Image (cartoon, rainbow, N blue to C red; front, side, top):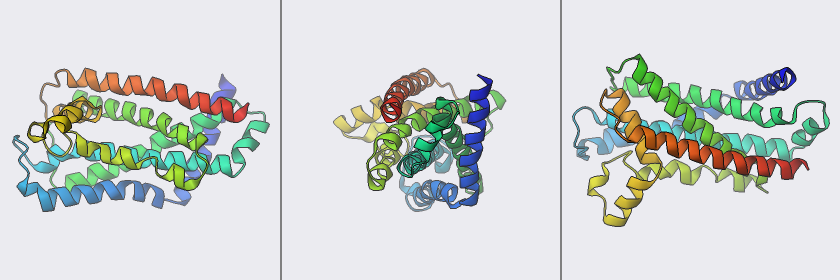
Length: 253
């Protein structure tokens, strides 16, 4: 076990070093969500009725945070694909290192890189007027939900990273996930949406996650949204891990 941990730490350090040498990865990851936040707050914000008191940036931030994670995990898929297509992956398999360390190195790197990107987005939101009087417990709840969502998305990204046959194919992984918040309560309440769209928006995983995060930092009751958010993230994490490991064994066997 200690060998697997030390191997994972070494491979995580390798991936993080690549990111430090190319910080534009994190900047690009945070740039699109920040641009969306600027657009919606300063162009559309005054015309959007959220039915809630407070600034629109407070309402908008949870969806922007999820978009940031989706954008970051798209890079995780791309980095893993480059290791596979470049032959580094096979070279690691031929060396006396724990097999699981190769994947966990990418997973832990994704967690760290997304954490940095999330901090950048929150700092920009603070400059735009975001404020919260939430206590430590509520913020720990927000951090826990975001960590669980990031872990789920990362294992989901491992699948195309291992199975894609071209860089173009793997690059498109994050696009539908980045735009999924548009069909949720991330930007506007679902009440005004047409029937089928409203049904989808209220029953897809983004909505309870967004609602739970928004309620936590607004110091409001989370209701069933917290449990639904954990159930969606936990369930999808199990499914994503299963198919990621299946793709991994096909790759190394």
